[in-house]
Each structure stands twice: as C-alpha cells, then as structure tokens.
Length: 129
Image (cartoon, helix red, strand yellow):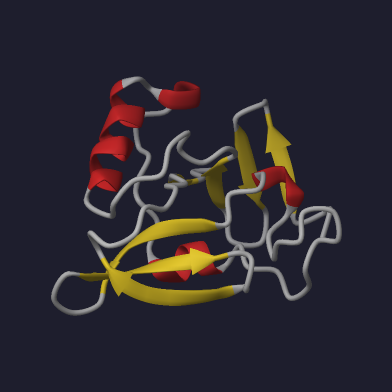
C-alpha cells in the first residue's frame, strides 16, 4: 500500500498504479453535486498546487482509491494520505437528477439524488509524466 501512493508536496497524492494525481485534502465543505463543478473551476482559476487542469473525477476514477482492506487508524477503505472524508462525489450521472458518490467507510460506489446529499469533492488530474 505504501508504494502505490506518494505525497507530492503537502497538497497532492500521486497514484503510481493509475498515473492520476489527486487533491490530498478534499473540499473543505460538503456540497451538493452540481456545486462540485464550480469547486473544480475555482481550483483551476487559483492554479491549485501550480496546475490549472483539475477535473471532477468519474465514478471509475474515484473508485480506484477504494482499498481492499480498511485502514485500521481511520476506519476507511482509502489510504490515510487522503484524510478522513467519508463520502466524495463523482462527476458521473446515472439517470435523471442522480449521481454517483464513493463511500470510503463502506468501500463502495452508490447512487443518490444530486440535490439530496452534501458530500466532499476531491479533484483529480492526469499526470503527464
């Protein structure tokens, strides 16, 4: 587990398995699904961690962070580098007004009404290296 993820500065986690670069800490606040797009736009406008190509992760991308075993310290199925945010939205819609989110407490992907729940956003970018 330690070899797969690497910290890049204080703000980023590189996933050596997928080649994706993740925002280490998710959004400071929970939000409804549609507000996640504005959150990512704001990251790009601010050039978060020196980059302007952040995006809202798809269901499949965010699901790659689900680990097969729960971390004993955090109780979550995600590497401790990512903190303790339990639920994160994905950009994936599934039907009318429904979107997918990843629940790292249960270690799975779920679908819920877009405006019904407030979850965190964890932005991602491709690693050009």
